[in-house]
Image 1 (tube, rainbow, N blue to C red):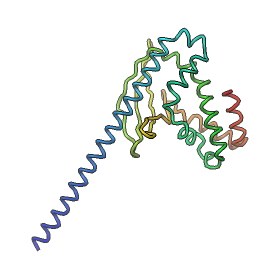
Image 2 (tube, rainbow, N blue to C red; image 1 turned 45 degrees about the vertical axis):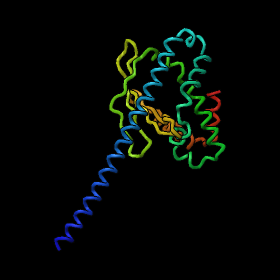
Image 3 (spheres, rainbow, N blue to C red; image 1 turned 90 degrees about the vertical axis):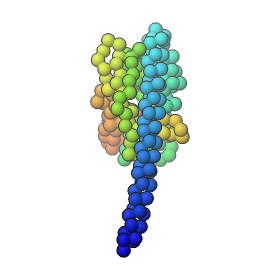
Image 4 (spheres, rainbow, N blue to C red; image 1 turned 90 degrees about the horizontal axis):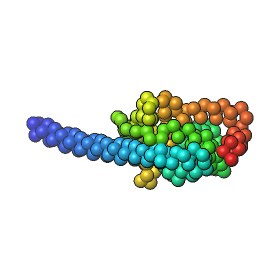
Length: 209
């Protein structure tokens, strides 16, 4: 009887030890993900604000040069597939493959044309990662940063990123409490429900052209 109990305790102890090792390993992987993802976001955004400062005169007078920089330095690190899917919400599920691709392309161009110019106010800003956390899903991280523009108060900027084939890409951003996906999804859902998805896509294509 005693031997049987001892064996059960030993087996239970081994299982708990293995589970602890697994949890520790998983936690260390997540911690590593957080560190790598945060460094990537901070490095990229710091590089961008430096470019904005160094080339302010050119970018202020030549919107095409500014847009080209955005396409070259920023767009490759944005997961537009995931961002578009989340933004369209229920309408993504009913969209055809062609409509999805048209929306992705149009949404990307609209964002470049709409927000590139406003980026200049962040020229020379300092970027600091603070308390970034892993998502419950491996390969996903919420990178929390504080952006301090020159002569202005700090602003919270949170980036939802995921690992796409070894590259950390952002699929959402929340700046000063304004969530990009939530903001667009509310408006796009209303428009698509009222006028139809095709009409929404056509309008975005026109605005980004």
